[in-house]
Amino acid sequence: MLSRFGSGQRPGAPVLLPVGVTEQHGLHLPTGVDDFLAAEVCRRTAVLMAERGRPVVVAPSVWCGLSEHHMGFGGTAMTSPADSGTSMRAGSGAA
Image (cartoon, rainbow, N blue to C red; front, side):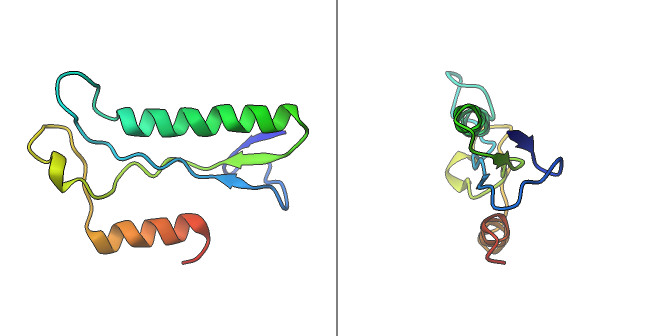
């Protein structure tokens, strides 16, 4: 069974956490490509697991992180190192 986070939680089911920062890489890729790819990898993995009878939950994407090296491009979303670490620990259940 494939569940979205917050709907039909499955006890003991692994949670897939897509992590891909919203940042601009230049004119050759769309803003948010890292987030789009991470979410799609998790979605496809969840479908494969569900087809094999393994319940799984896909959590919402963590789309904001450390992107200082992309700040020269428009559309980049960034947070502080402390907030980024807090988000990762919360997403892993270690907060």
